[in-house]
Length: 410
Image (cartoon, rainbow, N blue to C red; front, side, top):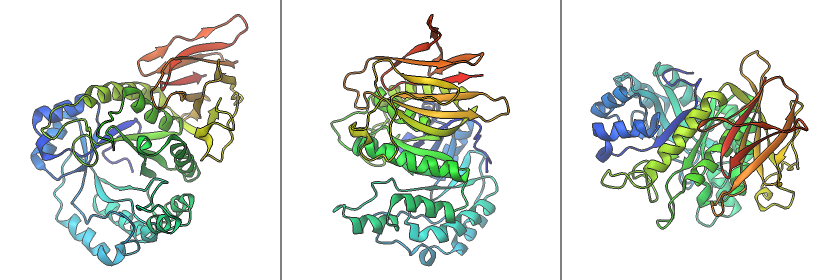
């Protein structure tokens, strides 16, 4: 289902480009910020012409009937309100454009609507031969204001979040799972649990993982730091994420977007540009591999960030290829075990230094491990990282708090 999106590379998206930010300068700056595609883009032909000029794709909303699960009150009514005929009629009247990569078919539906969404997805995929259907799911904190069990089920349509994802995989013939998680509006432990559930479902069913992260803030007095962006992105990559999507570039929800209401850059622009550049650089090596499993190294059983995670942490990680990997002082690492997408036998570890997600006291961490492979290298957001080898044969390299790196053995 590649179509116009090149899914052999790690793609970076952003939510919402309002009309006040669709001049040529704005779209050139969007591209320079490292954004590959925009979600919830209008079917604005002059803007799409500029998207094509600057190599940006659009997932267009409003072409087919929209849907949002909201508080769950509309759960189970999709088939009645949006029959397949509406989607087919919309496709007949659609005028294609090279910048349109995807068609937005909805956001955060209940599992009660997944059977109909299976039909919608298949119909839209066939009716729009150059585009893929885009469907984003709830996070594991889906609820309404009172946040009780009954209302959570009302949104998800299942008794648990794992069942919600299982029903999606059972009913919707997508080759990806996309969900949003706004970590700095919730907490790290739920973020880890959500990553475990979705990443493992992706591995079981052969799907890619796409994730929507936050560059803006629910609190108007808080601005996401560079390191907060790094932590979100690199932990997601340790779980195998292949599309990283930021919310929000312009006004959509919450505060402190990348551009303000006048279309002017805020302090978030340069932060996002820098982090996107790092992700893209690291992605050149990262996308040669695929996730096998993810491990929590150095957390300890009583670490607060393990409170929602059923998987036990380890003091040191040994995979067969890599032995006794840890941070020398025992600081937490989130480590994705990966294998080559090709038949060359290469193995890799995608590592995030997860010691300071709140960016309170960042420091330089020292990662150590053993490996008997003939060739061992480490790559980060700025290219190759210096890898030292001691007289005892152990390897070591430095990684800043919230930083990401991929260790490759051939």
